[in-house]
Image 1 (tube, rainbow, N blue to C red):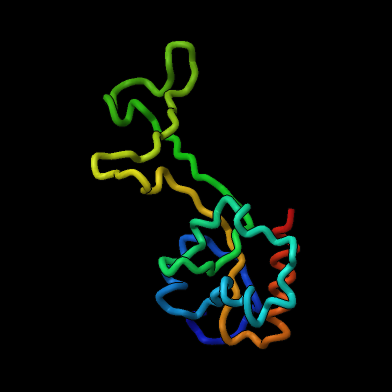
Image 2 (cartoon, rainbow, N blue to C red):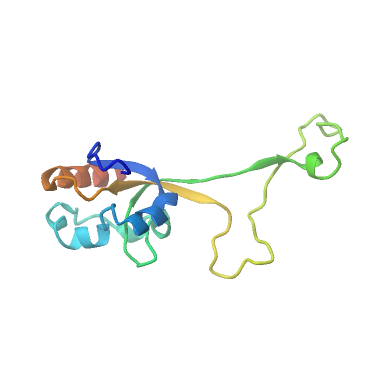
Length: 148
């Protein structure tokens, strides 16, 4: 993407890249593509609203820039004794480890509507500059791998 070379017709990258895609305008706006140039290869059964990660791949302009494909939530484990008293043993009295699941961040600055925890979705991304026939083939493949 940064080189300007057309190395791939489409690729899956983290939905964390949504800000980059919106700012650089190098990724295809899929909302417009599905209604325009790609309408003839957009599956009538594609239910974009059914995708869990849709909110992660929609830009601030309300347009979809990536098609979610692999939803995953990150779960962080930590050693409770490292945050309490570092001199404690590494296991409980019964021998089980003192590992805990980290709670979702919900600090004093959190407001209703803000994201809780960390989730991501590996998402199909099409880049501007891809020849039309190859982009249509890539879009069909992305839908095929993400279909119900």
